[in-house]
Length: 102
Image (cartoon, rainbow, N blue to C red; front, side):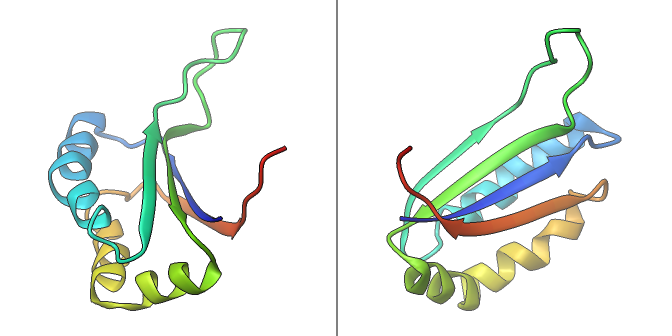
């Protein structure tokens, strides 16, 4: 399995972020060719009550690196990447790699 993980920084306007993510970005990402699984989470505060470093974490799973590359280099993948500045102005870190069970 191959994963893309998107780590979204805390937005200035969480409501606007959520609205765009839920109505535009997520539906677009769900159309990625080769996508097998797509999950998101909103991390909670740490044990001391401090705000988490990230507002939202998205994990997209593909069968392998070739499927990931094909999906991301196609029209839908390029549109999803081009959409990031429309809602992720606080920044996003994208990391990808082979995933395995521990």
